[in-house]
Length: 298
Image (tube, rainbow, N blue to C red; front, side, top):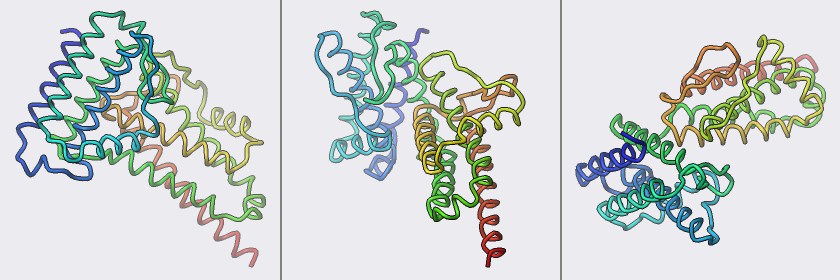
């Protein structure tokens, strides 16, 4: 079975699943089966529109914003639209998408997920989209609607960055020598995880860091020794958003990464758990350090 046949089978299977649900399960919600369907339809139709525009040598406006914003737009546009209409649109778009993949040079035809995404071949998109639909199907069957591991990581990172944001300039300067060796490696490992995941997403070679963990962390500290704390926390937020995007596109249990040369492969779920646990532990230590430092001064 080739990739286009797999995609057709997966789309039909998803539509059959949605259609078989009781009416109450197809009702509009914040993020339920109908909203997942609308999200998938939007991306399918967007890829079709892009392919048609590229082949006709016309301008095309890509989807704008973060994935959560794009998903919200899809949900809003689906309000009042019957599920049957959405499944019909999904199948029509899928037929068109597979037509382009089979009738054109799918390796050379470059499309984008969103305006700020890297171009990738339609052939790789066919594979990615099939995985993505299958991932959503599994989550719905398991009763999951949100990516819990990614959500927990995002919450912990927000708390971590809020901690630094609440510190006055005097405290940041006074304790920079303590803060920087903690913050720099955290930012590095998040950006490294993004690089490894995006290499898989875009079918590109990845540069995996090599050496002892202590040496890699020391290099991360050295290379960022002049970067302001506020810039580092901003980079951490950006890296986290990109990890959220990856978790949206792939089933985190299916995606496997190697974040350090000769290291053990980790599922994306396991990696997010490790990152979240480390940051949460670091945050507890930092709060204790700042509190004890203030008591000593007092």
